[in-house]
Length: 314
Image: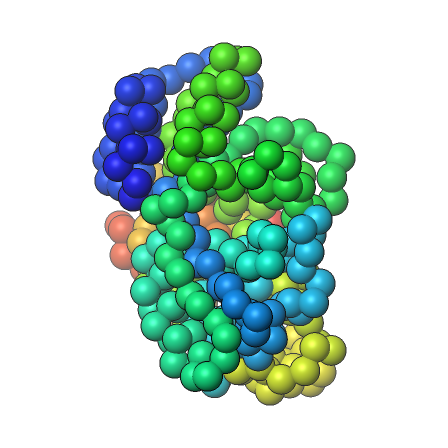
């Protein structure tokens, strides 16, 4: 993490539980601003950057512009998602926003395929900062806007900002001056869960095909772009029938289980796994056939109850 950015946040009353978990004193403002240090930024640059990425990821790189970003996944040859990401265009470069704990794995794996291509992979997490804002907007999902060296990516009721360290400090000060309350970074992760945005971890990497993570419905899978690693399995799942497991939003008020924790039904049969958990909100991947969802429980954690907030898969 950039030391200047960290020093600035500490001066703004931040408490660092870890480098990826930052808390602030409670406030009562409806407008929130979040420092997002749990995500890393991998820059992909060079004349062949677009062509290179097109052969490695599930979304169509040709659809990514300075005004439109996309979710996507990078898969292994068996079609299992190594990571999910948000792909953003920045000038001639591409930025992959992905979980920090998967950055090295993803960068090393991509580097093996660069070969003689004019492609450079750079960890830009230290030079660029990510901010989250509560921001109601009429922009379409994942629409992007770039101005004054700041990239904005719009969600339904939120906005994610990418800026260098100096600009991030200026933006933070301006927003706080206008009534925004600095808030716990885990709250943003809980909002991602409620929005059904599937981030992976080391524990869940290479466990699920992209359709199990709802990436097809989120626009993160192209079926017409051509070949990429894992494409055969992803396409077969689409054309031969739906995935055997699906993504649901759930809650478990008494526990925050670790990623990949098992979920059991009333008979004790394992029927799914936790993808993410923050502030009692969960994203879970469940079997779609013969699963009684009425009495779901965590396999460990004193068999705490798990209640679905979405009846159908996302």
